[in-house]
Picture 1 (spheres, helix red, strand yellow):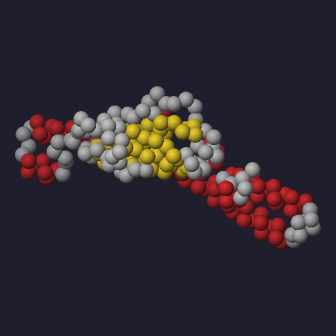
Picture 2 (cartoon, one colour; picture 1 turned 180 degrees about the vertical axis):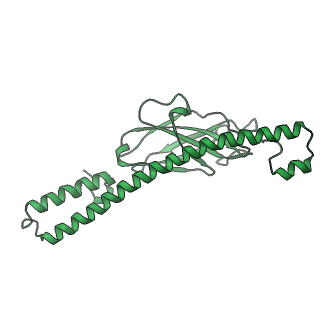
Picture 3 (cartoon, one colour; picture 1 turned 45 degrees about the vertical axis):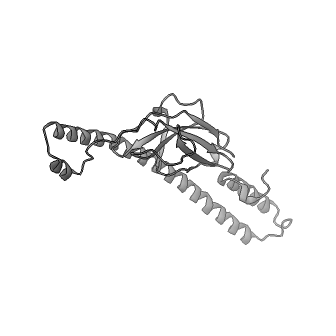
Length: 217
């Protein structure tokens, strides 16, 4: 049992509030409480319960919107890259290419920039702090030349993913660390993370090793 109310997760706090209201209602004299005070407590509990439900729905909607956006980004970049390559093949001048605002060359990951290497700090309840570096230079927390950030994907519960299709996209993190927040219902589950570099021209690097960590409840 947590030592303080502050340590309870949202779902745990609602459960305790429900039990408290039930106990007070059953024997108000024993707890030196009036019916009006019990009603006020019940109203606060109901308001918080509704707000938690709304937050969960908003987080789910945000994740879905992000996944939809990422799904439309890839074909747009592919078509823009095709237009760039076709224009260059047709002999478009530098001035003409500059007028399109398209990057000239598509920066590639330099040989020393392989994949992200990560670690997960699980010391806080329902929160993972994901730290990443460049695998060949683990003391350097800067992203490689040409990279806009590290793509981070996660799979909750079950065995580690075999590819990103089994994961949910979290973010393109431009500066380590990234903090992932979880709901109380995820406590005790394993979170599996996959990362790769997202380059400024829209291309991506190779996948990192999968990093797994328990969501502390």
